Amino acid sequence: MTTSTPLEEMAARVRHLLAVGRPDDAAPLVERHLAEHPDDVVALVLLSVCRHAAGRHDEAISVAAHAAALAPEFPLAHRQLAALLMDTGRARESLAAAHTARELDPEDHRNELVMVYALLAVGGTGNITAADRAAARARELAPEEPMVYVADGDVQRRMARFGAARTAYERALALAPDDPIALSSLAELDAGRGYALSASPLLAASLAAAPTDESVVLTATRSARAALWLLTDLASLILVATSLAAMVLRGQVDGPAGVAAAVVTAGCGVAGAAAYLRWRLRALSGPTRALIRQNLRRPTFAAAVFRVVVTAAAAVLFAIDPDPAGAGGVKVFAMPATSVPFLLLVLRARNWFAREVSWLVRRGWFSVAAGRREAAPQD
Image (cartoon, rainbow, N blue to C red):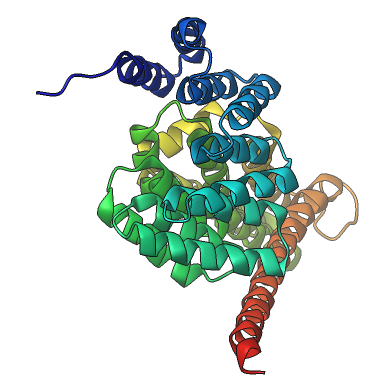
C-alpha cells in the first residue's frame, strides 16, 4: 500500500481550495511548507498559482521566475512562467519560456499546449501556423487528453476553420463530457458565429460544471447578450413592419375606419412581437435567462430591450396619428422611433456580412500559407 508524501497531501488540499475559489486560504498551506523546504520547486509553482488566482499577478510571476531560476532544468517551472506571462499580456516573454519548457521535455504534451497558446498570443501568420503544428504534435503525444483537442479547436477558430474547430471540441467532449472548458469553448464558437440560441444549452452545462470560473461566466454572459440581441432583432423587424403598415393605413384610409384598422394592425404587431419574445426566451436554458435578467440594467443588454419598446410605441403612435397627412405631430417622435431601430438592424446585418467575408478571406489566407509551407521542402 502506497502512502502520500507531505508534499502530495499539501498539493491536493491546495488544489481543492483553488477549485472552490479560496486562493487566500490555499496560499498559507504552501507558505508553511516552503518555510521548511525553501527550495521545493513544485511548492513554488503551487504558490505562484495561488498568487495568480488571488489576482496578485506580479507576485505570481516573480515566484514562478524564481522557481525557473532555481531549477532551470525543470520544465514545470518554465511552463508555469509561460502561462503567467501570457495571462498578463507579455506574449514574447511567454513564448521564450514555452520554448524552454518544450526543449527540456519535447515528449510532454503539456509543453506543446503552452506553446500553442503562447504562439497564438504573439499572433501573425507564421506563429499561428506553428501553433497548428504544435497542436497536432500534442494530439500525437496524448490522443486521449481532452485539452489537446480544446487547444486544436482554438487554433482552428483562429484560422476561421469553424467546422474543424467544432470537430475538435466535440472530440474533447467525447473524452470528457462535463469538461467546462470544452463546453464553454464550443458554446463560444457557436455564439461568436451568431448561433447564440443553440449555444445556450452548452453554456448552461458549462456553468453547472464550473459555476465559479470567471472565464466560463464571462463567456456565458456574452452569449446571453448575443441571444437577447438575436431575439430582439426579429421582434424589432416585426415592429418596424407594423409601424410602416400603421402609417400607410392612416394615410390611405380616412376617418374612424382608418384609425381602427391601424390600431388593430399595431395591436396585432405588438402582440405578435411580445408572443415571439416570450416563446423564444422560454426556449433558452434557465441559466441563460437568469443571466439576461441579472444584466438588464447594463447598457448593452438594456439597449436590446429598449429598441423593441420604442418601436412598439412608434407603431401605436402611427396608428393614432390625428394628422396622418402632416409632417408634424406624433411623427416627430414616431419617425425616429422607427427609423433608428431599422437602421440598427441594417447595421447589424452589414456587420454580419462583413464578418463572414473576413472569415472567408482568413480561411483562404491560411490555406495558402499552409500550402506554401508544404511546398517549401520541394523547392
